Image (cartoon, rainbow, N blue to C red; front, side, top):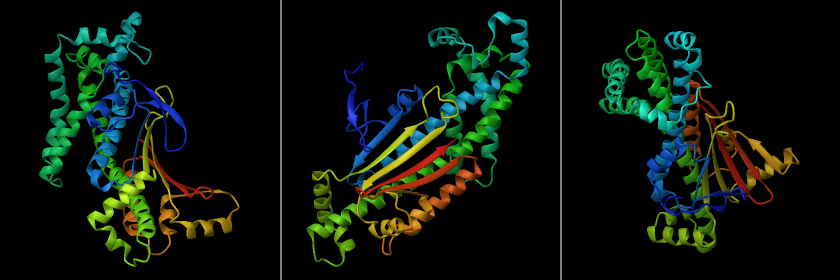
Length: 362
C-alpha cells in the first residue's frame, strides 16, 4: 500500500473471491518477507504453460515451505527458551517482569534494547552455530555442495529468529544458563534442517502435477486444431505448434492454477504449520476413470488419494510412472521427518474439474 498498490477483490481458481493484489512478476524474497510478517494467507498462480517458468515455480514453492518452517522454528525456539532453568529462576525473582508466553514487548522497544548489543548477538550466534557447522563439515556422507547448502540453511534459520528471542538470548548470554539455551536451539535447528529437505521434493511433485495437467490441455487442444494427426506428442514438441496451442489455451482462458494456502491464521491453534497446495484443472482426459467411479458411487464428487489417482489413469496417459515415483519419494521423505502428508483428488463430474490437494502439517 505504501507503493500505491491497492487491494482489490480477485476471483480465485475455486470461484471464490478474496482481497489481494495481482502481480505479473514478483520476487520470491519479497513473498518470503510478507509471509514472515503474516501478511500472506494464500498465493495463487494461473498459466496455460508452466515449462518456460519451471524453475521460478519450483523456487516459489520452496520459498513458501521454508517460510512456514522459519516461523515454526522461531515459535518453538521461544517455547523452549522460556522453559530453560535460567528463565524460570529469573521469573521467580522478578514476578513483576515475567518472561513467558504472555509477555508482550513492542518491536520498537525490542529494537531499541538490542541496538547496542550487536556484539553480543554475534557472539551468541557463533556459540550456537559453531558446533553445528563442525558437525556438518565432518560429515563424510555429504558432498561439498550438500555441506554448503546445510551451512547456509542453518544460518538462515538463525537469521529469522524474532527480536523477542534475541532479547532473551542476549539477556542471559553471560549467565551459566546460556549453555542450556544454545543446546535446545541446536536440537531444534537439527530437526528443522531435516524437515527443510522435503521442500525440494514438494516442489518437484507440484511441478510434475502442473506439467501433467498442462500436457493434457495441450493434447486436447491439439486434437481440435490438428484433427487427424496420429502422433500428437511429436507434434506438440514442435516449438511453433506448441506456441500456437498455448496462445489458443490462453485465449480460451483454459489454464492450470496452483495455490498455496498457509496455515489457519495467526491465532488458529495447531494450524500454524499447515500448508495446503491445490492444483485446479478443467479437463476431460479422465472420463474413463470417472465413469468407473460413477458405477461404484452415485455421488457427483469422489475423493481419492493421489496415489490412487495415478493408478486409475487410463492407459497411455503420459507422466503416470514419473508422478507415482515423485509421490512415493515425497511420502517417504515426510514420514522420516514426522511431517504429516495427505493427498486427495476431487473430480467434479458436473464440470470436468479436477482438483488435487496436497496437505502438509509440519
